[in-house]
Amino acid sequence: MLGVYGLISVVALRAQPPANPSTAAKPTPPAVAAKADDAASRLSWDATTKSYEAKPGEADAAFEFRVTNTSDAVVAIQTIATSCGCTAAELPPLPAAPYHLAVGATAPIRVLMDLKGKAGLVAKTVTVGTSVGSTLLTIQVNIPAAAVPTVAASGMGADRAKNLKIATHDRQAILKGDCAKCHATPAAGKMGQDLYGAVCTICHEANPRAAMIPDLHVARGPRDLAFWTKWISEGGPGTMMPGFAVKHGGPLDDDQVASLAMYLFAVFSHPAQAK
Image 1 (cartoon, rainbow, N blue to C red):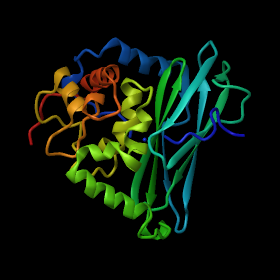
Image 2: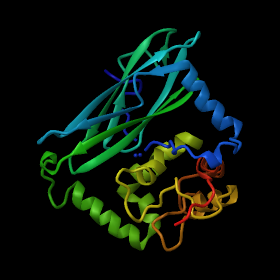
Image 3: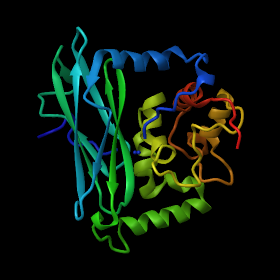
């Protein structure tokens, strides 16, 4: 059987903001910077983003990323989490978890995206957690209308339209029922950058991004740590942003809220840009 933990289906894009000279001198919390730097210096990937042009009639798209241990010690691949339930990732067969990558060894990580009910440019992410930090992988598929298999009115397409309509009336609905599989469940046990990749990118880093979803890379006003904490915890009244804190009906405990707020503060708190 393939997979460190079998096929892992858990929730959507890459949290890599564009270069911004005005933030070059802004201090980044040591825990955030060290985690990214450590993984980058000890692991080498053939790519962290891969794209594919879907053909008419294709029901899924397969990708393979290859990671090499370039450090002087064994690295353990501990978790693989996909950003959406329509995406699955696996490692080659192994005797036990975690997967131990020997010095100089290379391992393939295979990713499969379900294309049914989708059209246009669709992007999903896979967060690979290791003993030296985490890496965010991105897959992008351009799906022409002719490549989308027929979906019944009661199927995936209709469900998404229904869920969107419900969310406009009850922003907490995105964290309940079927929606929870993509927007809440994947948050379990995750912190900081991994948490962002699991439950935030599906909306805020989507390409194309829905018009009602704000672009976190563009600051319209001051965004300090208190701003991010309140926004994550309580959501935005009058918007589709739900409150993610447990006390507001969400899936995140106080520690998770704090870790996510710190990550967003470090990465996205740029000075306000002109409208």
